[in-house]
Length: 439
Image 1 (cartoon, rainbow, N blue to C red):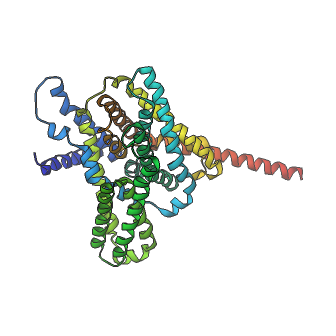
Image 2 (cartoon, rainbow, N blue to C red):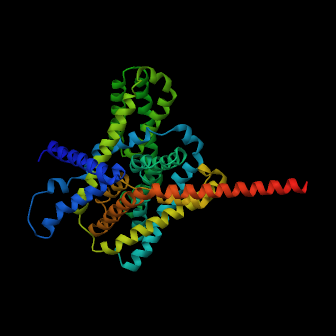
Image 3 (cartoon, rainbow, N blue to C red):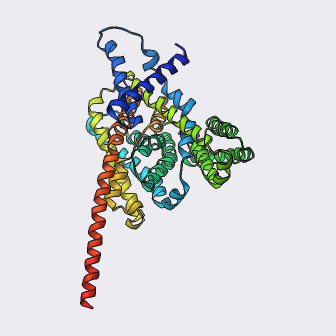
């Protein structure tokens, strides 16, 4: 089975699912891809599983997502998402974004680990405390790929979208740092201390990502050909990712640095670019790449989900992982929001409104899968299977359930905010009228 034939099958599924969804279901496109490909995955696996008949579908259901993500498309997906950042909105919401990206991820990961460890003790799972925290580091960071591809299409305000995008783009760096640190506590890389790991994974990624991006953008500015600029950006992110992975740095974080750097510099020469790239070929190219790679990833997630083994604890893992994930996210967002302060929350949200929206809109995706797939080499088989199952469950729940209902939750919160603003205005007018009467 050739790679080209597999690509034909995947693209055909994307087209068919898209047309069926547009005609009958009208769900957000990416969510529809996950949902329908999950159904297709069940249809492909079920006949052989139940012994109805034996057919060769392994070339589809057993695609190596680890290599597809880590050694193929992840860097381009992260670069594309990061390059779409609106810096004016980002700067205006910098405090909540930074606190959400740093503090929320730290608190959520730790609290998730604590809750899951308590659950593991009750359910007699073969997991110690640090392995549970490691799982928290995997599933707590919101994913920039899922956020930028799904939430942008749900009608959220630019201010709210900016906070969600900014958090998801930056907290993957926090998540990677925490993941590396906790991984060393579990056993892998135990010979290195945290400072060395921090320098290798994070500081090295920033240095390589910023350095190469600075050099390649000098070439970018010196050409007026949008096609050449596209080529330069491709060389930039691919070379940065390869170099970081070779040197032991975080290629994930470096790709985000590249995208943010290009977004910032492109915004500064926006008027100049509009003269020679009035058709926005550069931006259109990365939009198409983002859509194509996300679509392939979402289809692969669905059709390969049931090709993995299920842990013997799968039944109890389903409700526990979902509940713990929501509780940990709620705890982290609440603590960060209290530090930000009511007056600094975006779009004039109350604490309850902001926490509710940020808790429910936290989607997970390719980043969590990339992290958990990297645990196979140093975890026991039964423990790795638990982490893999929980990660898949969390990803599917956040995309299919939370992603499908975030728009509704947002509209409910907006209505509540409108009613609250009207009541506050009436109270203010009543106080003013009373004051005038007394005078």
